[in-house]
Image 1 (tube, helix red, strand yellow):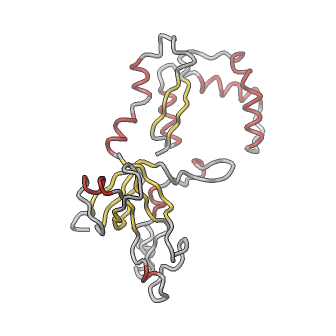
Image 2: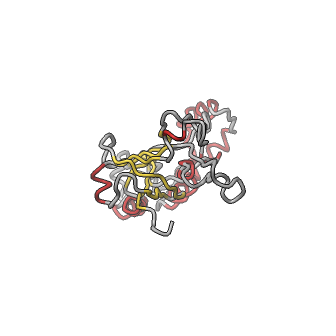
Image 3: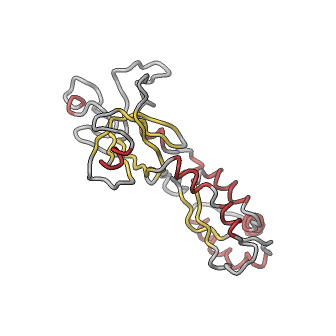
Length: 238
């Protein structure tokens, strides 16, 4: 789940002179990012983006950036008559629907010894034998409500995809959170497409987003934690 927690709704046309106060800070950030924007172009782009009378620009930006939902900050202009409850509800329309469909918080990147990243997955060298299956940690109460028992194969699904791992019921995790192991592939499965050694079967990366346009512009990092998901037992035919 990607959350924008500080969005200022600006339901009026923003004049260029109203933008200029922010330009030095924008230029400073651009310099850190290795960008050299033209000041006049930056002002014009800010005018276009900052004016959002009905929230439609925000929804489009959220979709393009894969932001699951945003929290509108209207404290600065709370007396503005155009910022009605209906406008706020429209802008935050994704919150309830997504949270109902994907009620759990997903953490990926779980590590386990003796495996190391994507290494040691082959049978016959003694490591995989100690940890043969990918495990998903789930708290007891949550597992009980979902009819999941320790050792069950389960599907972990979000807006980006679905993988399968084996449930490990544990009270060492928050009731709203699940944790999946990373780097899984299965050398014993066929190498040819579409299997590719079962690369997409249990790999946590299926549930994350690594599109270069969506990664951090400085570090290249992408969202690995605090993603929304749902969990259910693998259907019998699978």
